Image (cartoon, rainbow, N blue to C red; front, side, top):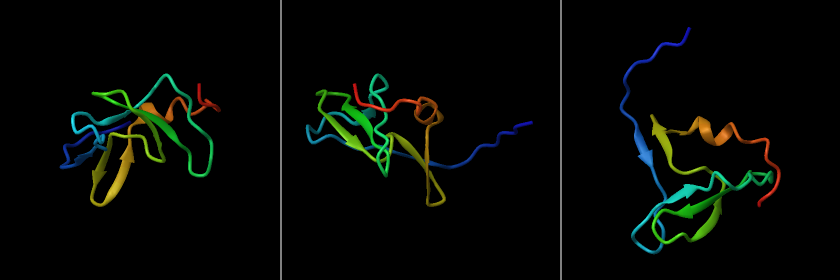
Length: 81
């Protein structure tokens, strides 16, 4: 059985060059299965698109980076739309 306890963690975001938004995973796009894998992201303000080897936002705890479960659960995708 899982147990939960509160922790002190940091949310890691990647700001866009537009200065207004942050990149978020485009969940309608497919993961690119290169080495490393690539996730398509869109700026939350201007819509600019790019790919990153980490799905942002992520959580950092004690120097370790953790990705959100929702970003690894749709990994069966093979191609960019």
